[in-house]
Amino acid sequence: MTIPDGIFKAYDVRGLYPQEVDEEAAERIGCALAQQLGATRLGTGMDPRPSSAGLLEAFAAGAAAGGAGTVDFGLVPTEMLYFGVASRGLDGGAMITASHNPPQYNGMKLVGAGALPLSGEQGIPELKQRSQALTELPTRIADAGYQRLDLYPAYVAHLRALVDTASFSPCRVVMDAANGVAGKLAPLVFDGTPVDRVEMYFEIDGTFPNHAPNPLLEENSREIRERVVAEKADLGIAWDGDADRCFFIDEHGAFVPGDFVTALLAEALLLKHPGAAILYDLRASRAVPDVISANGGVPLLNRVGHAFFKQRMRREQVLFGGEVSGHYYFSDNFNADSGFIPALLILELMSQKRATMAELLEPLRTKYFISGEINSTVDDVDAALARLEARFADGEITKLDGVSVDYERWHFNVRPSNTEPLLRLNLGADARDLMEEKRDLVLGVICEG
Image (spheres, helix red, strand yellow):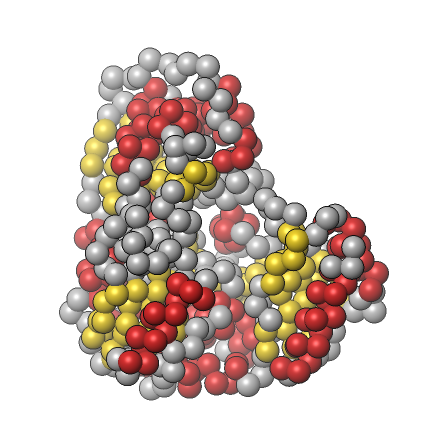
């Protein structure tokens, strides 16, 4: 068997099941990861896709052949796999998931010690080489060991220790678990709090029969947006399939962009940790650094991608990092991302400020106008980036990740996709008409070729 090159992505392993990712591939990857890390114990977890249990079992068998026992956390959100690996001092681990992808996909998010992720820049290329080179697996080590561990009580206690749920004001919140694993964790987290839950699709079903587990797509968030209004709820919270990202809907049914959420989370955390450093990604509007500075924090710009955030948070004393894609990282959570800590922090902030979500957002919505991410297919990525540099040479150009250009009243970043001939534009301005004008101008330059 040859493991296809294409399943090894920038941040994980992912492909169609069983055409690209199957049990044999999982077994070889398990063996390769154990050998690569020199591991004796690896953690595993899975999302509810029908193929996940078989892939987890195969991964564990491969890990044993590579010399590592398995601590199996079972059906968990991805953030609990990170917590289990870091808090239990394991050598690494694998979360069997294809995250927000449709049910016909599956894959793995892979970490080393401390839950530091493998990525396309570090770890995944070596894993690809090792797993593809395995012509046959070593004989399974009989005493490698296999243990099942229920992490839910420890993880709920961990979350409750980070946020004072007793301080929450009574509120009504519509929650959409998209039939993913958030439906298992959310009741344990919110039971006994003043939060009146309106549950949508909490029945766990990895075929995702109601809508795809990707709330960033308008068609997947439409129902919760309508439900928030119909229920006269104070907030809506939607999770993706493996629940490591959450998304917010205000009381009027409006979707809240990720950079505005990052700004609010920064404000909430700086109330507790004055003067802290906070990372934000270069796609964000100026709302994020402005709010961090206004609340006494230190804003630090960072490359896009969870590996880059987590590595820097380990190198430097950083409290929190936020990406516009909905990934939020916390130093108090082993520098790992979580889809539940943001939900708790936003509810705490609303209670502390005695404000609705729309009221918290009003200063941002009236000052920062953002395009959202716009993808353009191009014939030649490098040529298009060169055109942008030439056309906007009078701006302040940086090349941390793609091309970023700053002017006094507007700014943009254009970065290439890791996997497709796409350029991704994010643009912000201090007025809506200016944002729309400059958005169309930049898109015109991108598509000239």
